[in-house]
Length: 248
Ligand code: GLN
Image 1 (cartoon, rainbow, N blue to C red):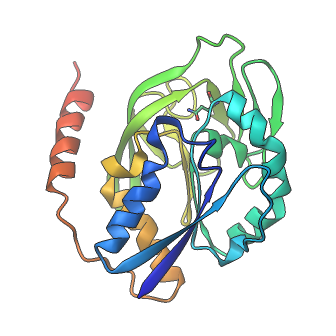
Image 2: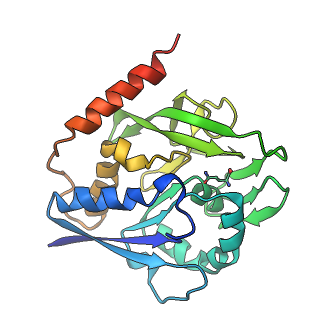
């Protein structure tokens, strides 16, 4: 049986808006194709000897400023292992708070700077006014395997992310990386970092399949996936696009 190994970092700390559901979606969509998704966990202040570079996916969900402060030291202690995984081509999927922490730094709404892993050039600063937040539904247009794909989700962040070399997509509705930004998230072929909660992958099955395909491709396996019955998901997407994108 084919297997994909996923390392879930801080599952009990970074889990805003059901972000852990992304792991469930990957597990389900793998199982439907006869692929076993093996889930490993890295927990805060619980040293382990997991070889991050032997994984196929590293996943970090979102968390509020408080949780980000809590885990900052532990994450910094993982810097070399995360970097080694990135260099080895492990797929990095990060949501909101996780997205921010892999950049240069996050300056939170109290003005406190949390160092990031510095894997990417972007950095994030929140307004000192805690009420100034980007909140609401968001639709982003990205490209997956050369085809345009609309990604839908929910954003709630005070952090404003700038110096994003290669954004995940173009904002069709919502804020994105900053107030009224034209762009959202960060991406490379095997990196997706986004502000979208929801959970991200339940509303965007095409994105889940992109991640799975890229993992199989890296393993040297055929990366074409048998289509699944996504009728309900498609109907839900169409309904939400109609509601969010056709506003007067
Ligand atoms: N604490 C960060 C912010 O407010 C991230 C929040 C989140 O993960 N939703 O910008």
